Length: 131
Image 1: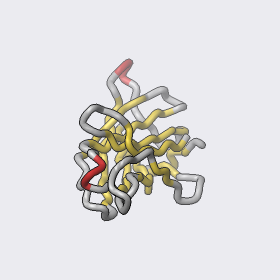
Image 2: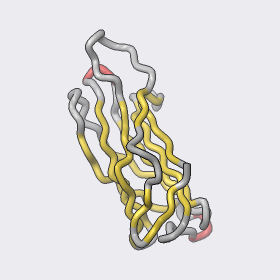
Image 3: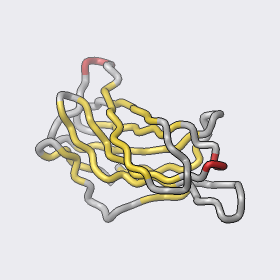
Image 4: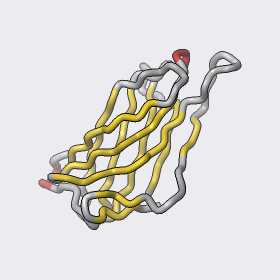
């Protein structure tokens, strides 16, 4: 599924979407998940609003967001440190283009967005991809 950068926002064309990753832990633990709420393009960068949840025993130490502009070819990633207490948290993650070839994110472009919760070894424990 693709999104189109309209005006200054990426328009998500699907219903609210999320996924749960493989999780091993205590029986009542909350499965790690991420939900992409919105993305706003400004000044060549994209700010992605992500809601996530993870249990303290999940081992999640990093929330990553990757944006790929399918029109301009720009690609970039950003990250945040998650608070894992079995409750929902919403963060805004700034994604800057990688700088390769001077490519940037533009309004009106089609884009793919993915999020991931990573453990200390860099393994995915809860991810979601749009586009």
